Length: 464
Length: 138
Figure 1 (cartoon, chains in turn purple, blue):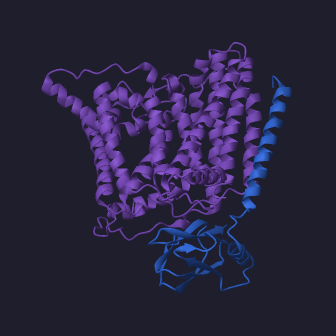
Figure 2: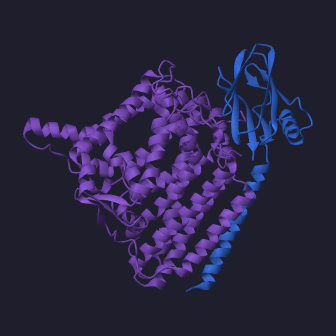
């Protein structure tokens, strides 16, 4: 057993590894930019205040009015319901079923993409929040009092969301194994998981309150909301407004466990990229070792992947914590705990860059399926053709290998620059003195360079 | 620059790391999966283009002999290969989305232009068994 294919359920085409010369250029640009960044940093923080300005009252009222919110909630609930229905009743061919592409590509990758530009666009469409609010309203109307909730344990913070995020990726990347071969998640299993998650989420909302759970525990609210902090629109006191881009990120990580969320994002994306390249040999030997030890093929494969995913999380966390530890030694530094949460938001652009680098081409190709045959024939049974597009296919010539490489490397370099910028800004705010701030930033710089070069390295050995 | 010496040290350290990583990448870029003579021959064929008949992938007991075969082409070349199979199944070339039936003990040939760049699987559709990996470089 020397060949261990890691197939995602949806991938009909994989990216070619980034060529060595482009890798070298990417890494060089990152180093030069970083070196430059140290010497020209500004002296006063620019992102600590978001300079939020309200938009026109009419527009704000129209977009945030109760009827509009009901429509958003209905759309979100309908789409989740459709995905679950298609998963349960539709074809078992993952690429022909609405469920997998909608849940793991359109929603899972699409919301981060729109959120980094616009802000938290998932919140109004969140199906669980919508149902939870309706349930809460019904309870109040029937019982004549507002539902009572448990106090959410402050220390738990966003840890439930971080663990949930890993579970969501684990389900797609690790769970879909059959007899020692990764076959990808099947639509039926995805639908069952979505139902289980819905039950769990409704229970947690009933216990702790809808808004509290969305803020700290609901995986998708927390994860998409994190990227939304980079975007430029946000609501305050029921009014829609524009803020300085990226500025809302500075107040994101004040909740405990936030660093774990962004680290989980980077780690799971890294693992997914590395399993077909950088980790391949190590995965194969571990897998064979487990099989030789008498463990079944499917279990061995899942155990191997789970172990390496956990190791990746630990590795990414260690790099970040080492950087924080270094910063804590610079004169005038705040406490280790404050630094640890205080710089977590600087990794959000890196997490987004990783997503783009690994899933950009998948998103572009799979969305063609989403908006043609998966809409016309959501069950994939060949019996419906709602919009007359059931027989369309994916045009894989839309993106050349060169275009994909430039987007991948470009995303990593830009994410790196933005991460450095946010880190420098935070350092100036914490240290006050510009020189000490710059000294502390050698450490964050090393962290960022490590992540970016690791990201480039993963791309260059992908599918090797 | 407040601490040019420190920054320079850091820069050199990082360059060294990047250099190591680059070496690692080029090394793995040229390695093959060791799929045996069949695989090596197929790559040679792909590069030289001397054998228009292309490669033959032999399927025994529903599995490719010598492991998953790697075929490598440059965009614009003609992808040509034959599958000899002892089991009846359907051969599916992903991405290009080509399907051809092969009878038990029979063979089927593919010939199509390499017009989509990327890495694609060819598999026995019924058994979900990958038999070849087709790489099309730009």
